[in-house]
Image 1 (cartoon, helix red, strand yellow):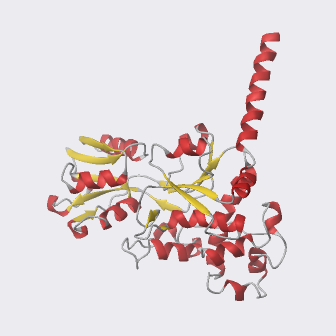
Image 2: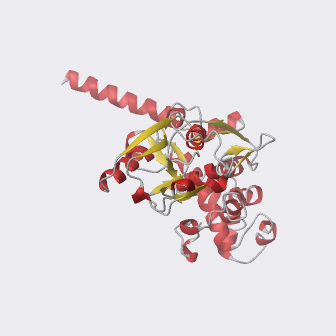
Image 3: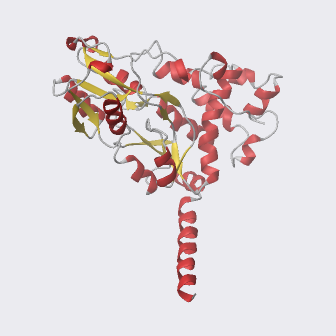
Length: 338
């Protein structure tokens, strides 16, 4: 019994220590004066620095939304570039406060890494990019193909499952970064490049001759992408989760970065609660009552972010599709602020 109690005591001590280490993220971020946000090394439309070094993208806006909620200033972010293999370790170790790097929510990641997914800011699926010279019109014509793929991603297992299910063979060339996989494809080392469809459109736009390649119609997996935090800190988990939800609700209610000041003076109860002119939703989040107002003012609603970074008027030319609001036939749905 003494030995059992010693073991139980050690487990309890470890649990309490872990909780202490992984809690208090909000206080640490405030004390530091900025948010440490993990992003990709350069994925156009999602997280990439422009020619002047300024980070832009849908995931970058997620980081900035959290900073706006906490500080009232979306600029108080340090962006930390991470590869797919580095991202989870960086979050687990505390190097970053939140991971916003086109990361797929899966059962294994959600239950075995000590991490929590705080929502889905982009619904995606894995596809195939091929050279038009191949004359291929369907993924079912890819038997015997060589495939460029990025290590440490869900794409590897999805690819194996798809080819096995359809009785096809393939060989892979594995790279550490998406840029390397694009270069491998462009140089002809492989016949096809596979990844999330959003990433394929981004990589296609970066080819020397973008029109020389095409994304095939097949989508072979579900890839719900979203921000990730450490387990053991519900306060921080709620802040990141509701920062995304605030952007969704703002779009649904017609609140934009341009009209937010005017809308805050209106009589719509739902808008009043969202923007902090009625009630105090920020109190339970340990934030200022204008936390959502600051997000919309500094970053914009979800639709603004989508169209600015990956929409039809950008080089990626991605339609809203599954990422339209629920009322428009999509999957993006924000629980109410009340």
